[in-house]
Length: 165
Image (cartoon, rainbow, N blue to C red; front, side):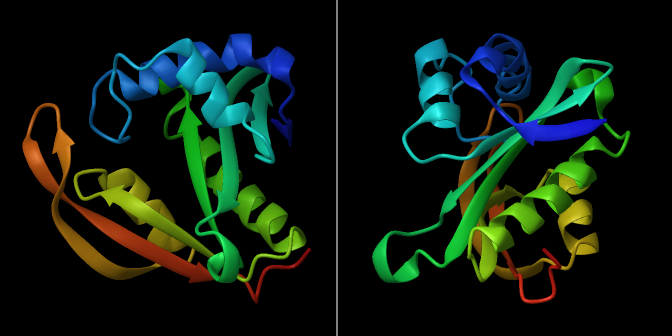
């Protein structure tokens, strides 16, 4: 497994992963009908560092990070992670988050904040807690889960001062 900076040529492999992750409407705020152009802009917009995970020379996951806020809040990062359903629960998600924390720290961020961790996404919550994120708050019925209706979402946070670069 290799994690490297994404290039625009990787988008052909990233697009099906994006579609597969958002199609169920259970973990991301994107509409399942969001377009290829929407996805491209999300991953390759100006100033967005995006990374891909390759396994056997195939892209199987991706992540990106950006400032959580502009200006005086820009020292806190925000990140997004997507992996192919075919490789779930094989350690790729954890490797991506760990890599992201290092890259965010290298980029000068002091903390990482996730604004919308869906309460029904137990796997992600367990992973983030294992990596020392803590709950900041609950957003009641903040996500319209496509099967369960309105469910809570969490804000999770982690300082990066212990991350070795």
